Image 1 (tube, rainbow over the protein chains, first blue to last red):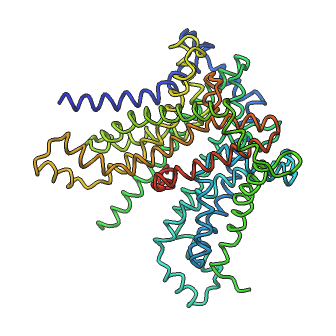
Image 2: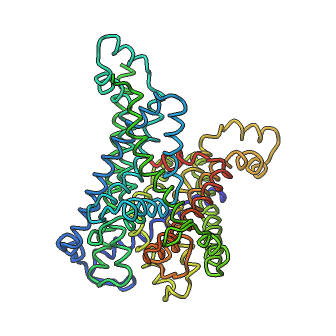
Image 3: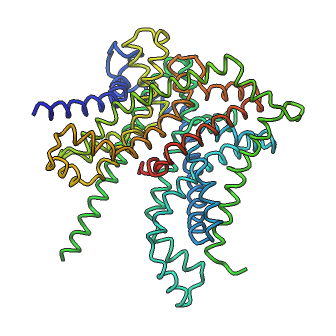
Length: 270
Length: 260
């Protein structure tokens, strides 16, 4: 019994370590305090600053646009890459899989630096063109989409594709209407993973971004090196908003899977 | 040419060659040349003879080893207790352990910094401690998840068999569960150790100005010294390859891919 209590206590302590900073910051973001410790009155001042300061709103929308754009490109590339690799001859498939593995195990610092060396130093592509930044984020994300789609292709029943061809579908049509629908879950989770990777990235953006552009990570890292207090506390509000968004997404997706499971149960028993 | 599924691999292969293979080839070129484009071993010998860079290598290893150990000491019991418990709220707690991965790391470190500020008074007084706390805080979910996955996939019959054959709970854990969860540990260690050697922003944000391997690349980058930066990148890459071989590529992609 005592052992059981100890186990639960340990889990609670680890959770506290992970969440106390975020939760405390969330509480303080609704006050006019500028430091943790001295609670002052309730205020939504930080949220007003967050959503009305052009510098902050621009940085947030830029980060989101970059994440969606890079994740979109990465999803298309990674998906067709996985389909292609699966049906290629063994050598070609091994070649693609091996290269695909490099950005996955590599440190982001090295990936970012090497892309900067190739695109900016060797090829003289200006960082202001945003090409190095987008290319860097696509390189970061596409391999994970590839890895997330691949298991779905392996599980897929290939005879349906053959059947579609026999029934007169063009290979392209068979691909779009037979293969792709079967691997949608892998594509969706690949896209979601790509978005989170891009949103969380610091190093690749740091080495490839235009000087005037900031992602949330590069902005926050700079801001902690001596920003104005109003910006500092507005970032507390940003952290709270992101935390609540994550909670919301988790809740909604959990409810959806539960409803789906319930629906499937219902159709099975009927 | 007739369209076939095979040809879909071509655009992705081209993409990988341009954005993954070519940058690495140029790292090799820059690492072994000087400003005039002449071949040189200077960057390599400099790294392994200069006391400063050797000190950085040593400090990176120290930080990475301590961080990995602390992460493991917290994450293993947490993952084990959760995976073997009969709690109704198991999936909710697991989700709580994973969720921090989706919150921007720089904002999370900012939050941690505010707390440490209150606890310690002056952050600059405990640079090593702060670095370890910050990295543990940042990377812990990546240690918990693979260990949890491995333990929860273990067949409960194995543990029951050990108990039936007379092993006490401690023996069962040490001789059955622990050895069988080694793949999860290895995968978690590889997800924490490498970032701990390279993620210098966590140190920067917590006022630890000592260099780790990643900071060397950052400082060469800031000085437009592509040759020096390329050599450090290559050395890191070599260590990463070695490390991956040693840990037997323990479901590397599985772990980071299982985030969803």
